[in-house]
Length: 238
Image (tube, rainbow, N blue to C red):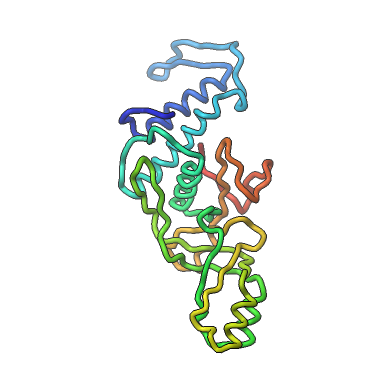
C-alpha cells in the first residue's frame, strides 16, 4: 500500500532517492552555507539488495509519473495501490515521452489490411519477415488512480515482422478476395513489438534508442536478467 496524501510525485521521488542514497553511504557530511557542520562516518552502508525493494519500486513509479504528468499537463497524487502491470505501463509511457523505442505488452500482434492488388512482390512480403514501422490505430494511453493519461499516437516497430496468417492471406488473394483481408503480424521471435511516439516522420525512427524497462522486481520478457543497455540502448534514471 502506498499513501502520500497530496504530495506531488516528483517530491516523493526526491525524498525516497535521498533516503536511499543516505542508507547506501558510509560517510555523511552536513553543511550549512557551504561550511561543514557535522560528519557522520564509520557506519556500515547497506547494499542495493538489502534496501527495501518496495521503496525502490515506489521511487521508480513516482519518477515515471512525474514525467508523464508534465507531458499530459495533468497533476495528482500517487495512487494508493500500484500493481506491477501499472508500473510497466507507466515506465513505457515515460520512455515514450523521453523519445525512446520500448517493447510494449500492448503490442503483441499488429493487424494490417491488404490494400494492393495481388502480385509476386506482395506474396513474397507475406511469406518473409520484414522490417516495419506502422502507425497504430489508437494512441498510447494508460490509467493511474482512475485517471486516463493519453501519451499520443505511436508507431509499432520491428525488424522482422512475420505474418501469422500468411497462407490464409494468399488463399484470399488467389480467390480474388485479397483486398481488405486482415493480416496479423507477430514481432519475429520477440514477445512484443517496440513502440515509439509518432511525433515525427518514420524516417526519424533510426535516431531513437531502444530502452529497457529496468524496473526492480519485474523481469522484462525476452531480456536476460544480466542484460544491460549497450550503445544502442538507453534507460531512465531511478
